[in-house]
Amino acid sequence: MLTQLKKISSNCNFCIHARWAVADIIEENLKRAEVESESDSDGDDKHCHTDTLELRSASGQEEEPVGKKSCCPSCSPSRFTEIKPVAWMILLGDSVHNFMDGMAIAAGFTQSPSIGLTLSLCVLLEELPHELGDFAVLISSGFSIGTALCVNFISACSAYLGMIVGLAIGEGSGDGSFYVFAAMAGVFLYISLSDMLPELRRSLERAEKRNESSFAVFLLEFAGLMVGSVCVVFVMLWSNSFMQRSSSRSL
Image 1 (cartoon, rainbow, N blue to C red):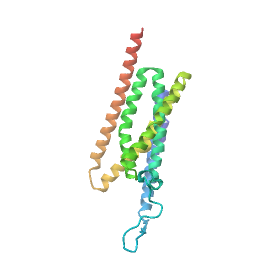
Image 2: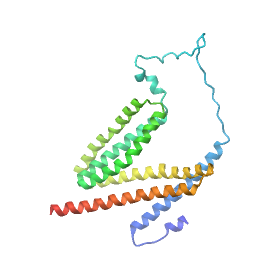
Image 3: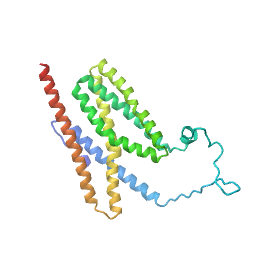
Image 4: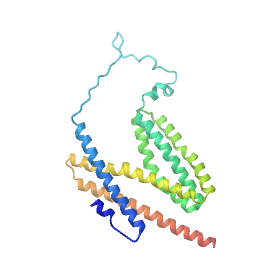
């Protein structure tokens, strides 16, 4: 069916590319589901047992290993070595992502205020739940609340570097902003296709394992996707009307 969908001809080149993209997305998610199902079945037969060694003194009380003591426990290097690697991966990914956000917003304001405001609103709606989730992951990875806030703020400051690069690209060449917008669109597509869609499918599988109504979960997910689509269309229409009003006032 996927191959037949790719062969559908149309006079609109955009429709052709859109159909190809949708077909590739469906095919990729089907392959991902098959691979994950095979890995889950293989992982059920494997078990890992670990033993924990504790240091105790002659009196039976636990002793802190040598080198763990520090005059400033929160700044001790040993505290950072205990952090899970996933936390550093999240911070690195957030830094790159925030850099792209700042670059896209700055490039948008070089084109027109309406484009800049639209991109700022989109980034705000996307980053608010994203940063809250990252903050929870950082705490569960071993960071304290204060340290998690600090490193998250440092990661967010990369948006200012992206703003400088975006302003330079937008002011330097007229076509440079469109390449920035294309790269930013790819980032949002990557987030939705690599994180959100697989998680939606896994939530349906978890509901089936708990003998819950997977159809109700599907309806809830579908309603969320529709609400997001309506918000995108609303922002797009508002942006077009704002640009028309600003152009008419300038004339």
